[in-house]
Image 1 (tube, helix red, strand yellow):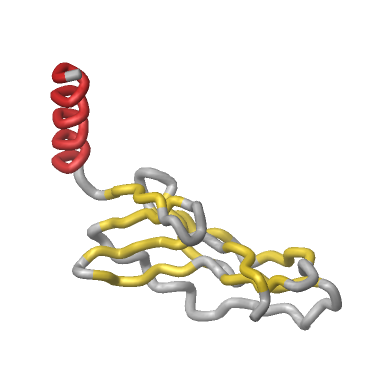
Image 2 (spheres, helix red, strand yellow; image 1 turned 60 degrees about the horizontal axis):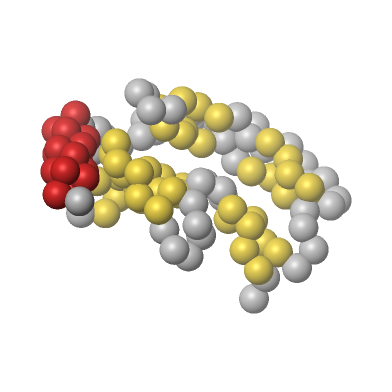
Length: 109
């Protein structure tokens, strides 16, 4: 048991010293939240947003973290889910770190 605790402590310490990204599971969404010390780049100046499509939800283009750098993901259409609302992916600054929350479906309230 002591050996396991030491191994976990060393692993945690090395993960913190390596640096930029930390993945933390959240209880509300059951998806990992990625926390970085660097902000995502600003989005392109002009994004083409297509006209609305019946039965679909537009997911805007955004940056995601691929483990080494920010990668642009183009916007896309998702088929709407009855009784649910889509929450687009977003980056938020919290205590000097940038957290990425991936897109998800929530119950409509």
